[in-house]
Image (cartoon, rainbow, N blue to C red; front, side):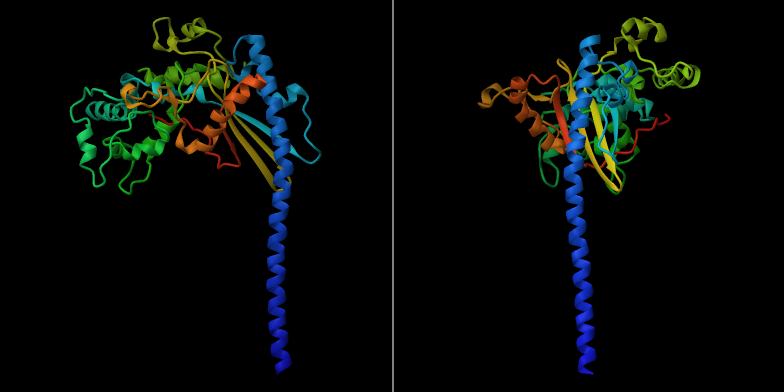
Length: 363
């Protein structure tokens, strides 16, 4: 009986030891795979950036992958290591509106297109702008004021600087009622807002990377024009046989929308471009997500501080959800001067959770 009990304990201990050893080996293998795939991902990223720079120098700017750089690795003749697959995808961040530079008219136009009433559109627009801009004067009845925040359970004050994260919408009076449900979770309008805006600073958004909300922000609610733009850029519908297209200049835009259309004021150049590199080998995956800006392109928003406060003016403030990446951008700014790197890195993340592909949302 004693021998049997001893065997049972020994067997149990052996099984636990084997399970723990298997887990340790799995962790070591994943670390080994990540280290090797990481090198491949960085090599692919550098090759991609080199191709983009070639096109930028040749054409004067970047406008669209349809210019010929949609598959930069094939263009450069890049071959990954045997057994690996490397994918490169692009997202034009400048196809959105720059939230730090947004106007009340753009916000109101978007909210109205989403079915929000006129009075609430004005109130929420004023609330967002009042949150971001010091000494902003609201023009809508019922727009929140500084005193409203002082009466909160935990009093606070509007920061007077651009949003660092879309989660800040949950702290803006009036806006939180529009963008969150009764359980205080982001709703569909919150997602549409995040899809329509960039947290980075640039002037006119690019029509070549148009988000589904771009024309609505200009007050263009004609669904036929919206569909025509989407078909033209993605090579669908009447443009299926021609493939994806892009606008080279304002004259091209006017030819489609008319010279008097507000769309003619949109840019045709990319201000910020997200590059996503995914390396796969068997079941192992490594991903890089980098947001870059060409010379004269998007920048990290600047906070205007009080001259009498004794603090420096023009202090950059990065989106909080990309704090590590912002540190890279700020810390690398001096290095880029030495290296003469062709692009500014606004964000840089490894193996972050990828959002679902943006889908057009019907109005």
